[in-house]
Image 1 (cartoon, rainbow, N blue to C red):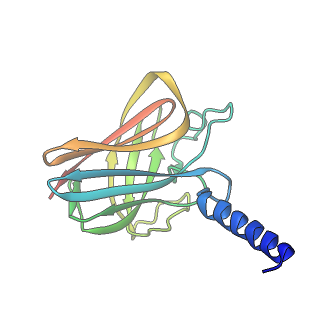
Image 2 (spheres, one colour):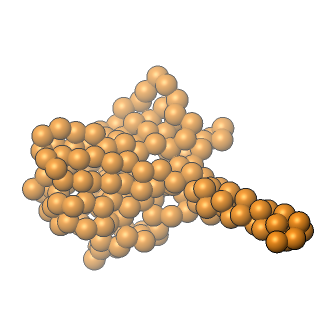
Length: 174
């Protein structure tokens, strides 16, 4: 192989490797993943991780509005087993997670059949469950949106942290 062809091949390889390793959303935010195994059953959440960039996104969210808990793409819950969010049974599969700002510090977790649910309106036909988050104001600010899954036994938690805000919703294995 001639030197110019070898250099071009090497350059193309480097560009391809860089492009494949950069997992960012269309807006430039990282994509996050939370995982939890309860009683040998796997639960995951994939979400965009926007940064605060000097703003407080949750505090500025108007009451009554719905937030997709991320940025440009839907936040996706995938479960290997049926889960119970409040009284609602969520079968094994993939769902979108969104949050609705009630009044003051009241927030609700929405589990939706539509895995691409990005709209700011709640579609009655696709929402499976709507349960309250427990809100806590924290002392440590989290710059980039972070969603974690925690739990033990049959009980798990979806925890959303951003800025000085922490939202926690409980679910149970069916």
